[in-house]
Image (tube, rainbow, N blue to C red; front, side, top):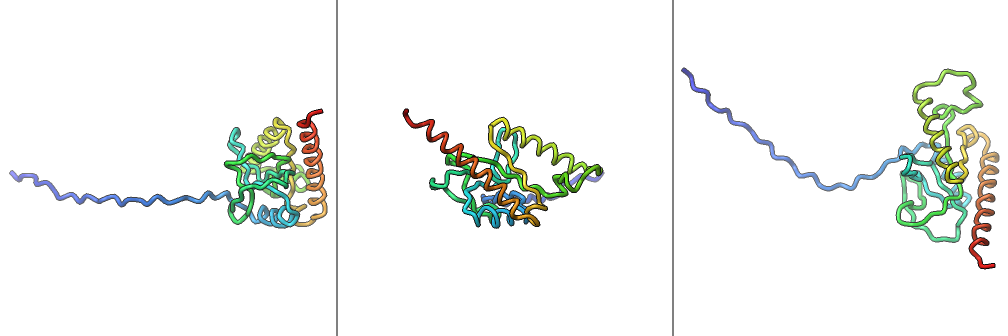
Length: 180
């Protein structure tokens, strides 16, 4: 009878992984970069890019403040230089969502058309963000891709309207804090 001889087993040593700092990627679209550069940076608007709404696990494209006189810590997120959200107080005057015409179903272009599952999901997420902003009494401005590309005056006037509204809100808050 043959005796079973144990085979030599090669043991692979695990290589130690160096602790690498992973850079967070936000999936920045060209549309968001163009919007930030053309409309926010060129008009000296102070904003956080990809503002995290932790309660709902979602990100707003931009959170804008009308408090320009404060000094904020800055960071670079996917090539967009903006205010850092963590570690400092940032009074949000309004949110901006830059919506692509196809993925977020621009009502001017998608009347009575069949929606894809991704479009339906995006509409659901958009409603969540609308509710989040409404519950906190923070205006949410939705700007369509078509307007960013073809109607810059409309976008600028819309932004200016909400900046002016934020400045009025700021004055009211400052007057409320003063002793009478």
